[in-house]
Length: 207
Image (tube, rainbow, N blue to C red; front, side, top):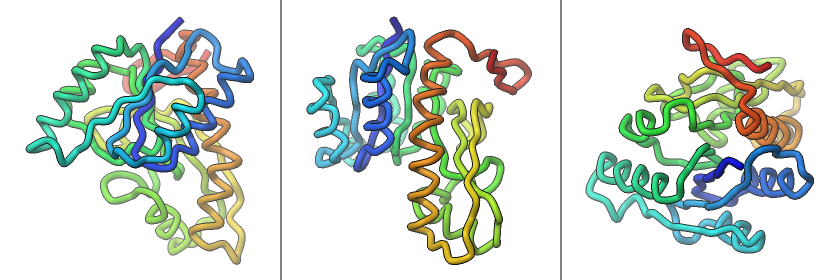
């Protein structure tokens, strides 16, 4: 049984999707053993506590720089015996020392179809604002491995939704979360825990 550690910063809707999927028996071969937040007041911590999951808080501003914060996070993940690290609305970019410690063992969900609307600065509503400004007809979400390149790791799963003419960033965000993110993230987590994902030449393959 693999130990799944979830990193959060905010409300924790993707964390809730993972918790619910685990309760339904949809995550095979793994269980959420700890939730680590970058903010002490993140509602995601309440969701974890309500589900009986251990929580930890590592506040970014308590550390001098990103290197010091990344080192502390790496140590925390090692202490928690992390087999898989899941970014679920975690808003801090960690440096390469964490990626190197957990190669192809960290996954993130991004609210767009990578390689579009991704990279530094593309987070939250900014992603959907950019997609609508470009006039895209479909959008969606991507579950990918976390590497040293922001949003640049191998793609595991993608899903789409249609973009309506009267969409706002908020309505598009909601549709993508409900129809893609909350479904694909638990699925990818289960695939990882079942050892059904392999990475070759920078591409992820699901069997």
